[in-house]
Image 1 (cartoon, protein in one colour):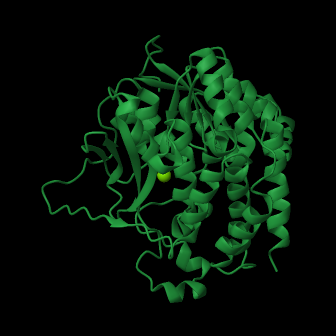
Image 2: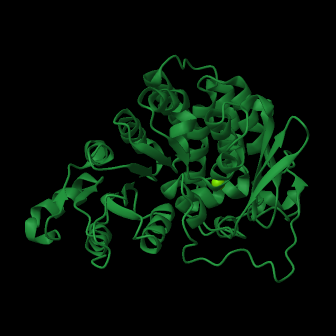
Amino acid sequence: MADHPASPRRKRVVLLGATGSIGENTLRVLRAHADALELVGVAANGSAEKLLAIAREFRVPHLALFNERASAALRAAGPAALPPGARLHAPGVEGLEALATLPEADVVLVAVVGTAGLRPALAALAAGKDLALASKEILVLAGAHVLAAAKKSGARLLPVDSEHNAVFQCLQGHRHDELRRVILTASGGAFRDWPVERLAEATVADALKHPNWAMGPKITVDSATLANKGLELIEAAVLFDLRPAQCAAIIHPQSIVHCLVEFGDGAMLAQLCPPSMTFPIQHALLHPARGPRGTEPALPLDRLLSLEFRPADEGRFPMLRLAREAMERGGAAPAVYNAANEVAVAAFLAGRLPFLGIPRVTEATLAALAAAPAADLPAVLAADSEARNFAEKQIP
Ligand code: MG
């Protein structure tokens, strides 16, 4: 970094959630674009060692560990444990919020797992920071609040999820009233070619064999059930102000086309790039510039490149049907869907629930709680925790 003198033109980035797969890909983008991007704040969950390695490499002045114990241990090690000039902020949401609102920050990338990123995301927007959003839960639970916060301060909401980032790109320069529908592509996950009858025997190891993307276990299972696409449809409706009927999913095994956007005249625009998160992350961080290509090769068009599309079968993928139903129902239903799925996937990964138990638990939880009140954010968060309790009880 020393060979890149501080320049007012470099965008200052805060990264919340640095050690997951989005975080690691963000660091790759920061390395490749050190002339344009500067990391000024970084937070991880519990790994002090990884946090400190990042702080040293990128000379980051503001650090936080979410996990209380890990944060206390690092603090107890004394200032000498930190790189010169670095400061350790508070643990928990407080530290994430402090980083998200640093006066020098231009853009805050939120990639923390679950709902812990919600308050920091809202705080960043309220402080006028552009928000690059990778955590799906935030929009599923609090989409309206996030949009309102962005509108109020004039900050930009930049989707990092590959499909939404692709839609964002395709919509540039187009009128919303001419948009007919948005179609998100899905690889189809580990079981797209399995006979449906065999899904009952699917093991954790089977579910974790994702054909195209290397990601954490939760999202890899969500790709196998298509719950990930279900959450993304909900997310798309929020981000792009669409009715449920305007959001669709299609199976595209190659994961090269990330979305199709259809306009009133029947024309479609697509966005293509290799299945690597560095592309949407770079787009979000450098927006409105694109910058030069990072470290990844572009699509190899000198060899055969075939692109296939097939309908997403809701019989094979009941989590897709349940997401659509939750979206149509509205209110707390999307939050209930997300919470029940999260509990069921954790139980599946722990060997406590069969693969087909995931849609079963989600459907039962939705049937019981989809109509929970959702007037404001506390009500939605209450529905979220009620759904978690209910779902837990459905697991034998
Ligand atoms: Mg995605």
